[in-house]
Image 1 (cartoon, rainbow, N blue to C red):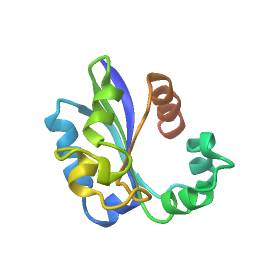
Image 2: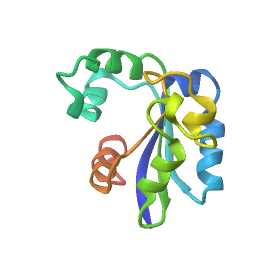
Image 3: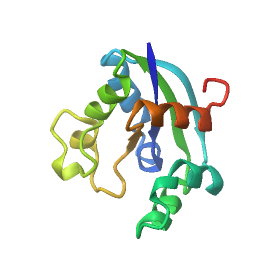
Image 4: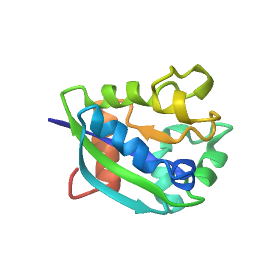
Length: 136
């Protein structure tokens, strides 16, 4: 079984959608291995989004992800778990996300698109070790 990181972003928690997102992951066959509701500090958020440093949206991204609690989770599934989760999430822009996906059904705007999922097996390992060092 492979693991990947999923974050219900502040907008998901604020709108009460964490349970719906977790339910969709579980209905797809993913198993929740770890979960914690927490407010991210700026340093952790900066480490998580390091690849975006220097981009025009970076500061807004850090402000958004640290503004209120997030649900940080590790889910386990088949060899391509991260890809399964990314497909279930839908396109980054909710307007382009397919119906039936989390973003296609529930998200409103690109800057607040409810959920983060690791974008590769390497990213999953890095992100899990950042948020859940005992599992990394």
